[in-house]
Length: 445
Image (tube, rainbow, N blue to C red; front, side):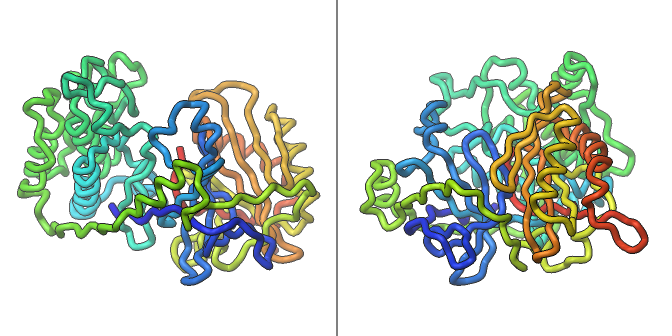
């Protein structure tokens, strides 16, 4: 797990390309949106390095009484983060199926190192699962989505955490019982479930009935497939121990023979924190060199954002553009995109019309739309963010990203939406739709 975050500095301005610029960073497309803000693609104009910048709305933070957990400027804070473009570990499993034992061990080693680092800083993740584990272009694992995490300060007088949260299939039995739990012990249980999934290609605990699922978790009732090695089975049994008092600790995992095979001790970055700048931001003082002066939003509609070569490459993994354009959306994808030779206005009009006919409420601003399903699905209302990008005067790319609801319902929606967009989707000479769906970037569930 690497830490490469800092507060973006400088006054907000507009570059020659018409894009927003904050300090040395030029903003591009939106990578994701969450309850408290959004994540934007950005480029360091000094180094050319691609980054992801999280923009948090202070008013929403204050409304939800989260100010003690998040730094703030006068109205927003810009956090510069590493741009992770290798996708989710979940996607790799969904596409390829189970991983070989050596490959699974490599990812598990990185996961344990990252979680151990978090624990050493008093942070407990509480929602570890393959969907929250990202890979960069070199296959290095990154832990994301700390929305349910807890700090050591949140521990009660009994030394335990008491908020039941997480994803049912990955959560430790003591968390479900709501009688208090050790955050570190709960996280290592989830790591064990992830390891099982990596090597088996399916969950150790899975039932459609939630109470039956919980009974299996309480009893640690799971069966390892025959291709698991004896040493990996023994480690899993010690991790997935329903008794947190006898469950193996991370320190013991690090000394386990199966775990140590091919193990490389991590090197963590240690950066000095400029507390004066942080204090200045909390105090809403412009004295800090990292204080951001925000631009007023333009009242007139702006043209579609021009997609640079850097962003076009970022849609694919690394510099390989072969997988940029695909014929259909992959099973595990939460976003997709298609190309069109129509004008941006025509694309926006068709999108609004097609989504409306499918029962979606459409909110439009310039060439961005937010689609909200009227009916509640398996995981609530399906919500989708869309944006139109200009690649060339006669070529646009339309991105659709699921921001809420069920992924399979998103796939069904896109299939139905495509029928209404057949007149604007660019087709090759053989009649194949040009679609791109290898989403890259950061997670913001």
